[in-house]
Length: 165
Image 1 (cartoon, one colour):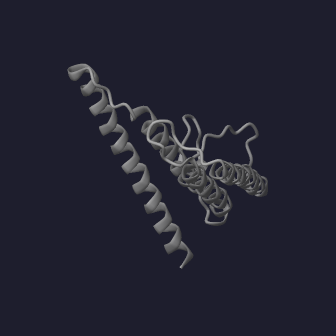
Image 2: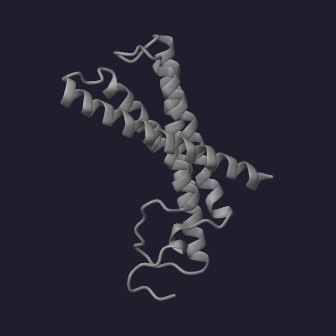
């Protein structure tokens, strides 16, 4: 049951990322054509690009954390129990950092909702985006905890040049 829920969440995040990339591509294309041919840029384009990039990046965080494919540097080659301990320590650190980021974004969402802050051109309420990022950061925190338990590790998936196994 848990694996099924995880798979659904991964699919939803992947679809969100794909839609964000498609929208970014189309928006930039239309903006470039509008600027070049008609001297009419998409006025609200920059605002939407900022939102889409934030959604794209924050949607990728849980997938990267779960798969263990985040950038890492192995300073001390570890085998056996030490390697397992380092994986759990890394998972706990990632959990803490993203839980803190999620809390900060939820607090930011509450603050901007209180003051009714909106985007400058489209007047979209900012609390929605801050809250959404808070949710994605919380999902990322949980992903960090799930990764070592489910055996996901980027180090196992990638063969570095010159490394024999």
